[in-house]
View 1 (cartoon, rainbow, N blue to C red):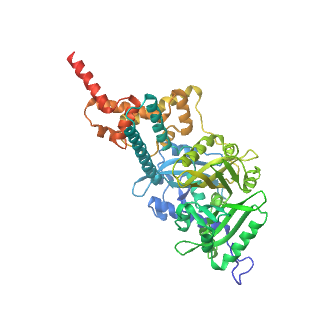
View 2: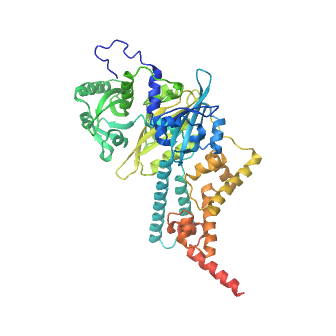
View 3: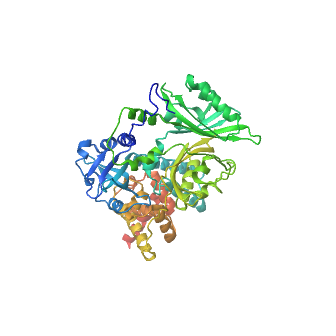
Length: 578
């Protein structure tokens, strides 16, 4: 809460133009933004982040057009200009051309608006995907290594494996590789970025024991490294400012002693480096049958950046602005619905804010995850979201986040962003999850549909999928610079989930398995030439190692590569002797 300055008039901030706040937020946003005139493509406004990404100065960018920065020849970009979603926005993948001529893979979202003079303009938000692509490659490599090591260990313990068991292992390998491509659907990275800027730290306070479980993000936000994700209330208390400590604790314990179901407060919090953050906290109170508070589940949010922005605006009266409506979404984000999922009992706890946000009764704040909460996911998102969440639970990660559509009680659809901390026991098994849902929709979203081809065109589409895979495996040595799911979706201009389901239904195998079969066929062709070694073949087909290729080769053919080469040589010798 902002305190009034001594001697200041009652409306000391009344002279601050709201446009000034929006313009300063635009200029200082961490994410690159460019505003253009729709008809000509001329760039008329850019922020600092856009200059940093492209390497051009602001003056240089303002002399250029859209075609100078974006690869406008790409089909996906042209389609984005002519189509938008139900909110008047469109999203696509495209290369950004820097001052040095370097192409950077990015995801861009664009929204068209009309200024006061009736001129159509477009604001384009840019997300640099180069780092995420590089990190995903590293993750894929590590996963392949883990799978490979597990196979070698299993073989050392058991010399003879039945054919049925080998089939199970092969299927597990395929599933593991498919998980590395699990970033499907149309996650709006720009919405996720805005929500991340809220800097939430989830926590769960067991009032009886005094222990507080905190999310891993506490190190990123406040700098504290917490062992086993557990602290005590006195540790939290020591981080409060001395002048505020008694007041905050009194208000907290008064609320716990009442019949209230929630607690919220704003206060200053010491960071590990000695600096002080301005924070706000909101939590739901869990009570026993007698009404006694036994747990507090909530999130603390660092709002220092917002207050710094307000302070800067006190010294600035007016700033030119003509794109205010586009940036209002960022200012509406705040801590929303808090939820807690007990994985051992499958009980799902929802805060009272869910009824206010989405219209559903929280049934005394309790429920079942599978029977209640998950049923409100949009049907086009449900499978991917549940898979993503359960994959995170099964893995060793301690953090999960996702953007998806949530069906409200009145039938409308809202865009939400969820982020959660996964609490694990000493053996690393997930036992509960504490999360926060942000409603990032400015208005209820209409159903978004992906174009589906006519029935008589589906075989043609399946043929195109096969041709793309065959071309990549058999006739190209270059490794993709993006996930195959993104590449295929962009190439055919259809949602990957739809393509995957269509292919599986028609061919009886997943796309990933078809790729593996083609890679093994290509490996056979190369081995039969006798001109390249197995190491060269593994590299050519982008396997992480020779062992990886050998294991996959045997799962598909039933033979090791060396035995296959031996049989081929014997057949060749026999044919020559005839």
